[in-house]
Length: 66
Length: 261
Image 1 (spheres, rainbow over the protein chains, first blue to last red):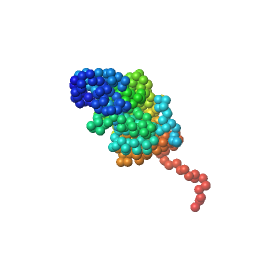
Image 2 (cartoon, each protein chain N blue to C red):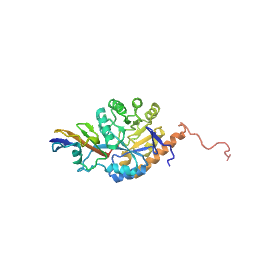
Image 3 (cartoon, rainbow over the protein chains, first blue to last red):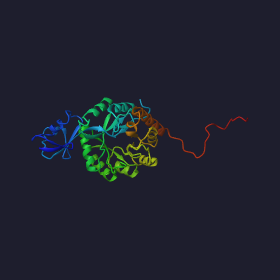
Image 4 (cartoon, chains in turn cyan, purple):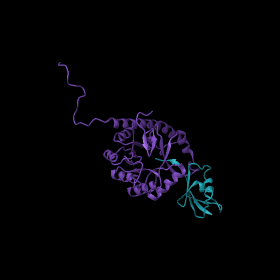
């Protein structure tokens, strides 16, 4: 399936979860937050939340900011 | 020990009345030195995409903040609507395990001043969601009162536009805001140098938030130390009670006993 991960088009295997998407960007889980199609997915649900074709996933972390 | 009293913000006691924004630092090392020199106990962070290729790996900034022993205040920088800001606040809660948020809803790209029409409902909604809401607001006393009325834990008026270094454009409004609300007033945005921070405190603000003035200074750690002292000095001066301004001089040396020469 094709989806948008942090604004970049990606192919992922069918059945991939939010946890898989996060793992493709970072090995860390602390200090990371995820939204799928603009809805927050709590960390406890990453491994069980399946992604679908066309999903927009945002994987966010702390950045310098005032 | 600080020579001034602690700041109580939403029931939490902070030993420093200086809050540091982390934006604008040239390196994490420079940021860490500035945080330590500032004596702050609370710093702001933003949420941005993990970008290992572009250099934004997850975790680096947080490790430094933990090492410094400072609290994290996530912001909603870059948001333009109440809906967007509320989502970012919830994502900040997930990432940083805090219900505190520095709420920013920007209404204009050139001035980065807040959009009052979006800001109040965003604050109201986040308060209802259980957040401790610290809104970045303009220097409008009525808007500040509205934000306090919907349950914000503090109000954070801009002295002048973010990053402008223009100082406090309307000191009278800052005083009016101090009178208009019961919650802490934190002067946020526009500070250029130490005297601006001291003035904010002399006007009665409870704390000052500084980012660019420190992180973009030629020597950020030294400017952070300057801000630390300025905030303490301004607080002491405010409590000490300044003399009234006079049009003419008033001699401090008595005339009585002056020799006839």
